[in-house]
Image (tube, rainbow, N blue to C red; front, side):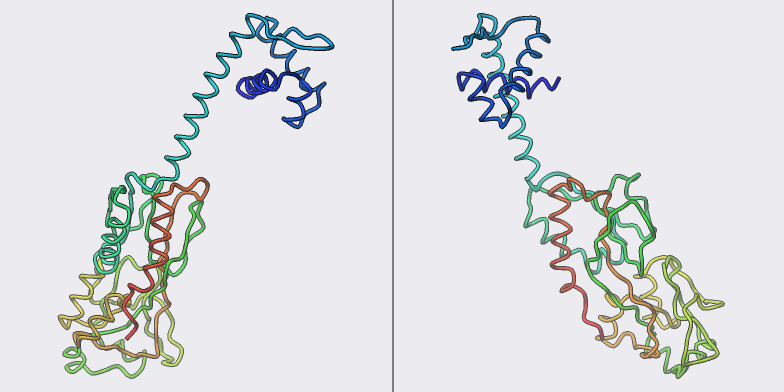
Length: 302
């Protein structure tokens, strides 16, 4: 027996003064409603309503049960209303995971704007370049920069796209020469990002159709894009950077594009979260905010 629904049915019978009116109000047949009432009385082991062909009246026990039903149902309605109101409020602790370089270079000002817009949200940001398990680590949202996402039970929303730029310091290129073909890269010091999901521009004997694979014998590998950028600016070699790091450095003359026609595959910025069913307002607000503002915050391609 669905106790609360049965109590609501009993309450309507009493308030409307009879089975026929209550049945019409509830969209049930009188016979069906009468059956429910008999089942309730059998369950309780008492007679709640004295019924004749002409009228009905509450028994003394029924009167007390009606009063208790009203009190309990009103309290339940108040609780449900309160929970529903809370479920619509954008508040609470928001745990976010994002790559270190992207968080510091692009997300930082956006996160500040988000927290000003939603002052009842408290942010717990973990910056980690390695891919982490969002569920086991308890993150509400993980920001991932990938060419594609592996099959997963997680939900993903693409927020923006970014290009990969092969570049080097002008001083390095002045000293070592500017590559004219992909095969020329074999004669240069190559710096790579060791955690890249997709491989860097590879060396290929056919300069017009370069393949994409880690360059053989890379001189230096690092697992952080900011460090890779600094090494490239220092003139240590040629490497691939995401556009949000490469473009500002190219614009101010610290770096220069290498082989502009040969571009590694684009990456995309994804928001990954455990489920879209009953998504918490704070999570939905955060993802919607990034989807709206992130594309405009990405540096223009140089």
